[in-house]
Image (cartoon, rainbow, N blue to C red; front, top):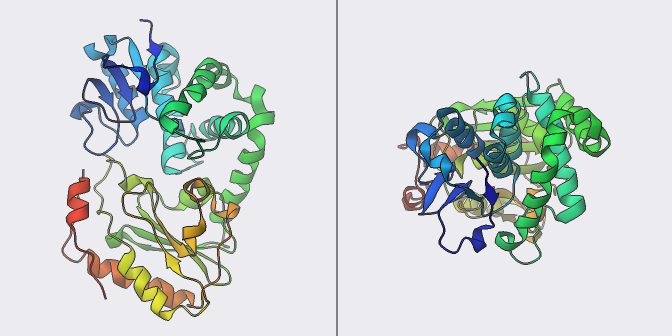
Length: 350
């Protein structure tokens, strides 16, 4: 079977296999909320959905056109896997790990395929930024501009997948940073406080880390309260609640606005607690966060300045947990929260 990748904007009504997005015509293989992905094929990532479809050999895979609305590692892995079915199934474990690391930033180096997957993710990250543009950094329109990334990586990826160490010069700088920070995240320099009933984990570590290292301690949780030295904090919703995961139920996203208001009433540093809408892919509650672009917020915590708060760590964490304990008082975890359901929930104050 021969497939052709066609940019989403160039479909002109044609039937297509749509990876990591929405469309009413064709086969959708996506973990996006309320997608038309067949229930039996769903998984935590869009790459999971694709690989499940390949293993099931569903008839709809005979559609010869593949498309995507944006470029990211999860979506790319899905598109590439369909176009390279035999090789994809040979490397299924690595591809699934790549999607988890790329989309959810959840790295577990104890897993068999994780180290190889990390090398491949770092290779894509390095070239994506050097040759094209960083995620959320499209000059005008991601829908139009992402096609150039697909063209390049679809041609090059098979060689790297087969022999990643031949491309060490490209992936090693980020890989080494991740491994170094991973060691810190799993050392006695880093303390964890988990609140399973809230889907929240608080991570106390001296300095901001690479996301893949920081979130390696957050698997199974959907909110991360990162607490660094000098009263520097960020509270973040993981991407796991922007999409529908199938491995476990989740709590919905709740507006951070009432919590920000309470924090601002106590903050005397001269800075302001800001936040993004729950519909943002990764909302962050942080001091003076509104000066950051979406591209800058997507970058690793160590790549942005995090300001010191006048609120002490114990008080900050207490306010966070009290807010979400009240907000989730009558809400129970479930699968497949819709955007309508989450927007209808009223934020609960203190």
